[in-house]
Image 1 (cartoon, rainbow, N blue to C red):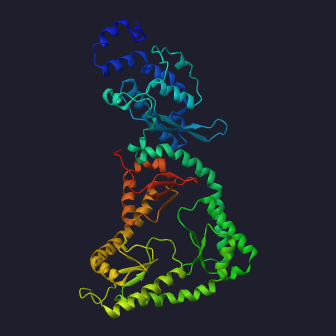
Image 2 (cartoon, rainbow, N blue to C red):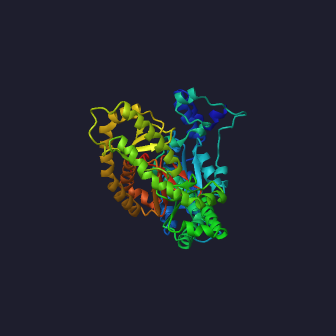
Image 3 (cartoon, rainbow, N blue to C red):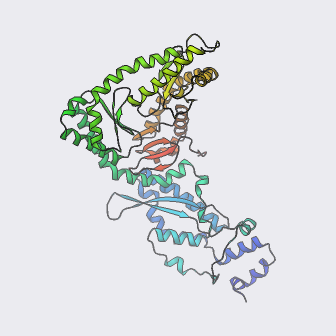
Length: 486
């Protein structure tokens, strides 16, 4: 009698006449799978560790464990019933035995082909004994060599591929499931970085008071450790060079990507440069002030050359440095003056273009219409090309500007409501997320608030284009996150 026949002599006679798929299921059922009762008995120590009732004082942990247990039970039921569930990743909170009141997180990847293997993995991940599972009989003999499973076989039999662990559950991932898996790690990192954030608050207050600054800010997405280093560097610089205190008095300081002076007169210090470079720029501030005073006249010259069009800069953009901007304006003014004298403007243009907004950028920039309705023009743009672009996009630009003005207040109101209803400690967006994107995202978050608020309460959230947990515990979610019907 063969090993397969030894599983159950009577059943062997019946299943040999069935289709290959049914045959495989019968063999697996009779020889491999654990029963529902066996699974429950084997996982009883695990349930005692993660049961939601044990986490009444930790709402997020209670919610995550409850949701993860439901997904786990559903996955095990599918395996017991010979179905082929997709791999799934779960996360559970457990109490820290060494530190009272503290929680740890354990991640589980359910990508094994049988309930026995899943149960064994769970017990191992939580350092629980596996003796009960190991002692359960398993009649099917292991092959003497590794079997290479091929996709055509699985396509025909609908069985689970043991080597299909590279399948990514992210294909079906949504915001809720992503938060379930990652908020534990975010919470841990947030707690670790809390002392750094407290240092940042203290250093910022100290610098503003000591230097009498009107404002002290930094670019979005700057890590807490890096930011604290920048603040400490500025404080050390002022201690060793007392003369710059008088120069900085009453000014605004911003930590960004470049070092220089912005169009508003703010001191911009690059987060990647050394303090000596900062010192050079600060000492040259009086000279930069004279350059800033020339900007309105140069903007007016560009405006007059294009029938009083508004010359401004992008709504959402890092600080523009004075030195670069003056060069851009000078180049465009010269070319427009020559063109105007030779060609003139189209007869279809109105007498004034004051309802339009023009942004003059670097020579390498694109000629385009921004999502807020602004005309973005590189300083190297040929005048005839700019004139044609304005002619073709004039109506669309006016419409987009009006739409932006109408939704700007709506975005602000939704921001405040979302932050309050979800209990967020911090909510901000990336510069590339436009108001219409942000409004859609916030409305969907509010609609799903009853389900998401336990997970997001106390979190620091960035609305971006991707999912991520930052080193300091801040969480990035895409504005167009996939929403399930909860």
